[in-house]
Image (cartoon, rainbow, N blue to C red; front, side, top):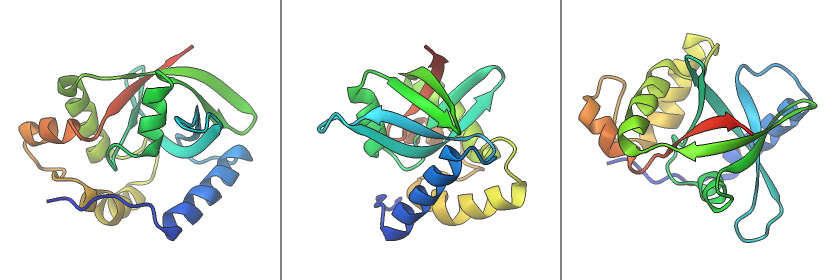
Length: 159
């Protein structure tokens, strides 16, 4: 059974560093800062996320389950912004049905974020993603279907 995700001090520090790097416009593959109104406060909440690409479509995959950015995005009905440097793109994120989400979820787990070197993907996946999942890269498609129920996938559409 996967362990529940908790953002400790190291994750908060890493997210702060990533937000700074991405806001400055430094190249970080397909990582972006997701900005969405907080579901309780209404103030802008910024979270660094990896944007996964399949063909001409882009996705946000909640590898850690239904975390705060997922709850905020749902409360905002998918209205959000993706930022890298001075470029801000207004987007609508549409949550995929479980059957479609499972395929995207599997592809994202196997490949990792686009253009990130494979050794970095392998280490990150092994130590920072797989402990929170009940699947591995070799798992059967049915297992991904089960995990897609608790790890939502959103298709990003330009607004």
